[in-house]
Image (cartoon, rainbow, N blue to C red; front, side):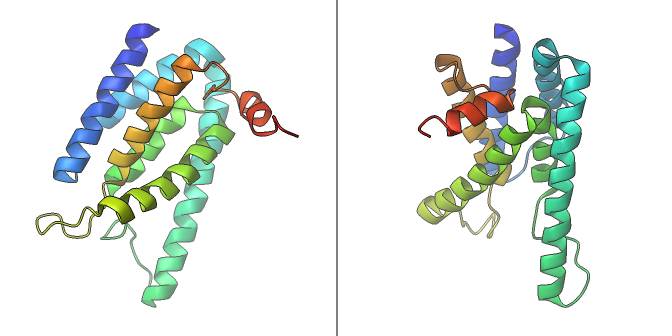
Length: 175
């Protein structure tokens, strides 16, 4: 399990570096990340439970992209492909790959909080350069946040990315 987590960490670190430096990630890193996360999750949850979690997460993601497409199309007053200047294909591939490493509620929480953190990072550090234009390294920032979350979960067993019950208990602790 240690080698598997180390492999995931190395792939995520590579993604962070590539996205921050080049605003792009090698395509072959996404299936490697997906495979490593899937193996890790199957060891804990089993195949059928992992598939159930991934399906729910991907449906959530699909609804998000449908809503984003509708919103941008309404603003542009024409049907708009969001992957044409609004959202990177690598960002979508990253979100699909990491769905194999979370329970459904943990995935939704990570997705929402990471988007808020990316907005904050971009406001603070502003990654606008002439060579990259206004592209935001979304997958890179999210990979960095996932690395931090994985490190925290190693030292704090209460943080369990594969258990909705652990998340619910953690969130309701004070009530």
